[in-house]
Length: 279
Image 1 (tube, rainbow, N blue to C red):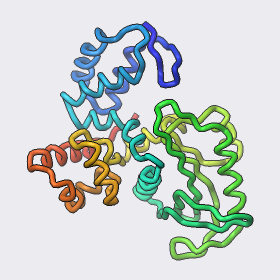
Image 2 (image 1 turned 30 degrees about the vertical axis):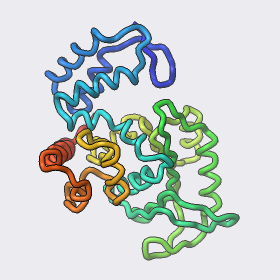
Image 3 (image 1 turned 90 degrees about the vertical axis):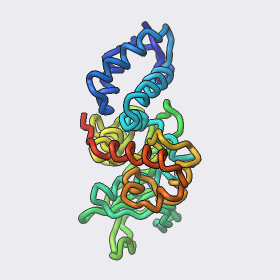
């Protein structure tokens, strides 16, 4: 049977890939078997991977909300919009969790022009300019013109002393980060010019999905127990990561949930944070 992937391509339906994606989200072998047996009879020629995802997600919610939350990570990242401001905030939090100092929204004067930084990060003796490219569609790809543009920015700010993180420093490296995909030309260009690049699936086995699962850095948009309005309230209040409202009860109180729903939300969040998934 042929299915359509996110890029509109017709590919063979591989049930092992479906099972693997469920397993990699933390589903037990028993739950994986249940969902596969539930979904496969409903599949038809030309079904899209998006439709498959919806069926699997709904089935997972009935078995484990925390596993469903992990499974929905890609969609959750696409909800950090609409313009990508919260995606930049999330990336800043991700790198903080990995031991970096970060700043957002800085204006940096280059040799030629002024630049607005999405994220600036520092670790040890390295200071990084981080360009964040947010996309809210499943099939988005970042073309080679974007790393070219980022490289020109880095060239304009290189060799200049800046007061950042309480010290004088110069930019040493650049990052291009996206929740989408890179074209092959983009990665080839980035590798040639030593531009650090991070996307949903790049570098292989070390992309955003792997990074989040291995370090439990889930955004609040993953949660299945609260609605879109409630998620927006958390983001607007500065609560970007699931662990932030678990550690700080003030965020939870902003939502004015009834006791039952509050307990469900906390349970989902704590379960989500309790297991590191590595592939």
